[in-house]
Amino acid sequence: MNILVVGGGGREHAIIKKLKEDPRAENIYALPGNGGIAADAVCLGGSAADIPAVIAAARENNIDFVVVAPDDPLVLGMADALEAEGFLCFGPRKNAAIIEGSKAFSKDLMKKYGIPTAAFETFTDIDRALAYVDDCPLPTVVKADGLALGKGVLICETREAAREAVRSMMEGRLFGDSGATVIIEEFLTGPEVSVLSFTDGETVVPMVSSMDHKRALDGDQGLNTGGMGTIAPNPCYTPEIAAKCMETIFLPTIRAMKAEGRPFRGCLYFGLMLTSDGPRVIEYNCRFGDPETQVVLPLLESSLLEIMLAVSEGRLSGTEVRFSDQSACCVILASQGYPQKYEKGFPITLPETAADERIYIAGAVQKDGRLLTSGGRVLGAVAVAEDLPAAINKAYTLADKIHFGNAFCRRDIGRRALKALEGK
Ligand code: AMP
Ligand code: GLY
Image (cartoon, rainbow, N blue to C red):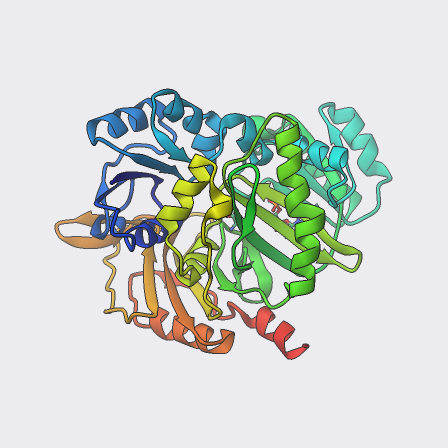
């Protein structure tokens, strides 16, 4: 089988490595891919959001199955376009990807179907939004409606900060047109859990839970990033909470999307907060998380290719999805300065990896036979072990054997999770 994976980060590297474990995966292509993915797939370059280029690449390489991993092409309708050309595709259609593409849509969906989430108001008029923040409870959360690279959320402790957030999104267009509509919502507290799930629109199968670390620096300080590390499973997510999420969030969401005529087929990501009043949805993503995927897929024992085919063909209920009961940790090595300005072009030296270690490359290019840094998040060092403390230790041991100029990582990935374990 010839497979095309659209995307070119650490998440896509993890997906490709897992797909390769199935003997049916003969040739794997990545568009664009990257210098590290090139060790595992034929990298075609180009842009993941370029729908005509992806269709042309699928034709040219006799592709049997396309996996669209990033949010922007899905929100733009790449899955629809591929299907219209007769290609079997993993990833939701445009009318379902809107669950991530518009927060106003997802908040209205949750309200309509009684799915627990933070109380909110939606605004398209700046004066009304400013009047609202003048007497809403503080802190308050101001969110841009559309895609903003995970950065369109501002938590405001003061009224002045809330006004400034509204102005910068609606007037200053801090996040471009994504901020033409804003959502202002109740501030919730509690541990956060990421649950990725496979769904064919009828059946939903949650994957092992995980925990992201979004801030750039130790102790959850510094700017928000795309994610500086992950652990799985998330110890805060007990079997009781999982059962409650299935009943109050996962199944109701799948049924709501179907009832709206927008069946969701692909990976639906539930970003949850475990509040004292029960689990609440913080966000939906229409795709695998990055770097959640880098800890979830190494724990998957069943064939990812088989599951993805089953999702795309609407036969997930009869398909085995089995996870190991081990733990995994991913430490992201980034370029100093990320998520702002950083230098690139430094050579990367990689150690040999053992069976329970993986290095997923996110931002690197090949030049004259060498691997050079080319991104903010450069790679993820991942280890699997019998429990979480051992996985964390092994991931840092691996990370410390990887070298490139201006590298930095957080040294406390998993610490919060270990604290939660101690509390049990
Ligand atoms: P989002 O892009 O919606 O996932 O938001 C990014 C981050 O902002 C989340 O992971 C939370 O840490 C935080 N956040 C979002 N919404 C809320 C909320 N209502 N209350 C508290 N924190 C929030
Ligand atoms: N790690 C968060 C995300 O993928 O959106």
